[in-house]
Image (tube, rainbow, N blue to C red; front, side):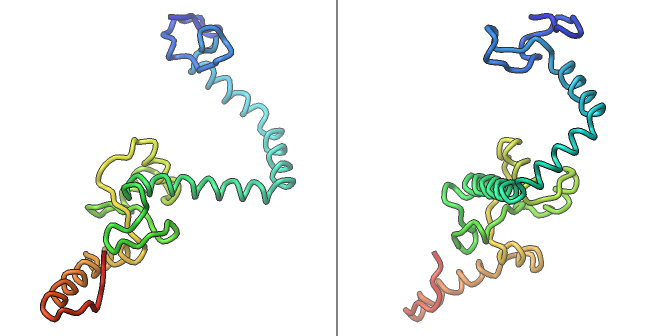
Length: 179
């Protein structure tokens, strides 16, 4: 237990922000007071903060865009690796290459689920998956398989794979080969 420097209330140590520079490893101000102080500062210094951000962006726009783009790709790759079992690949047609891949809700209803979470989709959704500890019910699909599943109810790849195996068994040829 420790008393907050601002509100003077005794609170457990996990109610304080981490600060490795201090002996206890926690700050002197509780998270609630720290957040309140931060909001107040932002409210009273909004113009200065916005002007600083505007000038910073003008001077470094290419670097900022590149950094954000790399961050988005890194988050997507991490999520695809988790749901793809290490190597990101479509769980239907087995195509590899994260530029073609995305995360699919196995039971459908993905658009509505993302809206209910208050997210825009894409990177926001990937960050939510990571923050939520990678919940079950998702798979990696390429754009074509995901779109076919959405429009047709199932992907034709599965049907082609079954037909291909039957054709190979009966005729001995390998017209189509899926892994």
